[in-house]
Image 1 (cartoon, helix red, strand yellow):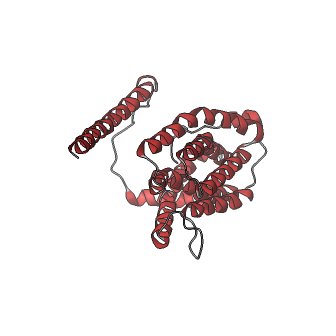
Image 2 (spheres, rainbow, N blue to C red):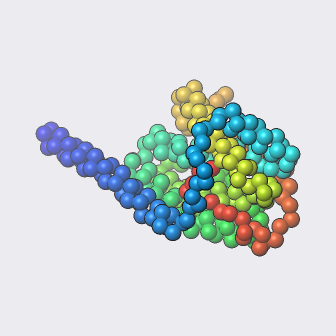
Image 3 (cartoon, rainbow, N blue to C red):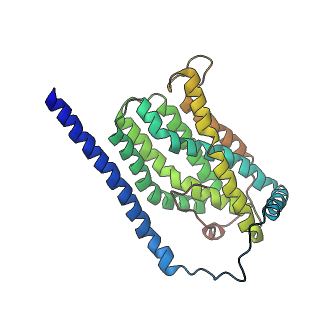
Length: 277
């Protein structure tokens, strides 16, 4: 009995130490990859005196952007589709670890799955960029959304850690590409002289979408009593996430993309793979 208690205490201390070291390594990671920005990217000096934030003017500018954007029906339709499917992406990112815990997977497996996504997402985003150049960003986004739907459907029935790791690898293949191609597609639907203004609204839509999916999944889990509940009047929480992707896919189909060349697509700004819009 005493030996068991001592062993538990030793493992508890090791886990605490590991968590502390993980925070330190994250800080070092941010520092190292921020150095190129700090050292080699020139930032224009601010002109004139600093002004106080004028909230009335800010909201007036936002209203003007909203009205101006509504004149571009394709861009407006894309934003609605993006709001839906990026909500599904954010829900997977936020709820994946909690869902894995509810299925009884160990913390080490969950951490490994999350790390796997990050390391696969970067090179996969480069491949997706090439696909976007050749076939267009709309088709690449379609592939990513269908992949997410397949992952969420299979997650309903997975039982082993190996299956979780396989699903994590598949998510990593489309995670970065979906985000970068979304930005590329949106840039094709808006006037070039309004890039900064419209992309600001694009980022607001992405941030606003991050709330709906987790709330919906939490509500369904709470009312059904089980994350796997798929029979009866309550949908499965993971399938609920899949339904979000389906809604985004249906709205994306109706978006008309102007004719562009591969060269024009290469000139579109791409997003960092792990970033959220």
